[in-house]
Amino acid sequence: MYAAQLTFECYRDTTITAVEKAITSLIDSYYFNGQIVGREFPTVMKDGYFVTRVVCPQKDALQGHNNSAVVEHFSTKLSDAGLLQPKVKILGLDINSDSSDECESPSWQILYTTFVHSCSPLRCGDHFSPIALYTLPPIANGDFKTVLKWQQDWQACDQIQMNGALKAEFAVLEELTSFNSDLTRRGRDICKEIERLSKRPTYYYLYRVGGSDLQSETNRTCPGCDTHWQVDPPIHGVFSFKCDNCRLVSNLSWDFQ
Image (cartoon, rainbow, N blue to C red; front, top):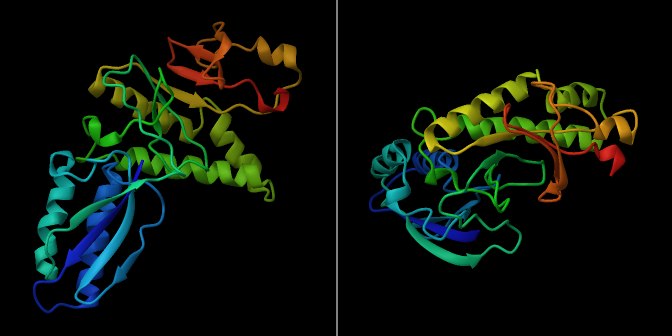
């Protein structure tokens, strides 16, 4: 991924409040279209202009042809705050980020994330690299807000269960691991919609921890259709289970790895 700098120049007198609202709205729209990733987008005020630092999945992520209708809308609103269109400068490769997938047509995809990842939650099934969301048809309201809100919720649950310091750990584990949880249902609905629009098989990652012993864990069946779904060796060293019928992948319980 690439670190980039957006420079917003003022062409008339304005206010900090108007500028802050205009820049924040545009940055949010970039985020929900998948054109930038991460959690923090610092903006600093200079002498007559403002600078925002972002991370992009690809070098051309912020070019106009990747904009959603929502991004275009907030781009036009910049002038209301006395701002010109941003000048984009690519600073270079971000050494702390995953590289985006370069595959033009993955044979399958996986909806997968963890609390340590800030990249796209959709991954190429062939290479396990994150797929830039804006390269896909938008799934709702012109962008990928539903996908990224699901990712935020999944990561919040993962953070709580990894810390293991709250009673809420058991509730969030149910959301992460249960085939019938609200989080899983939302994620699987997203997978179905992405598959419908992209015409690519799209699988949901069902997190697995616990279990009584290694043998019973290895022999467990798909929670959706009760069929054998173990694969050997594990796909990408992570997924020991895959059901083509239910579009599910899962790991061997982390308790036995």
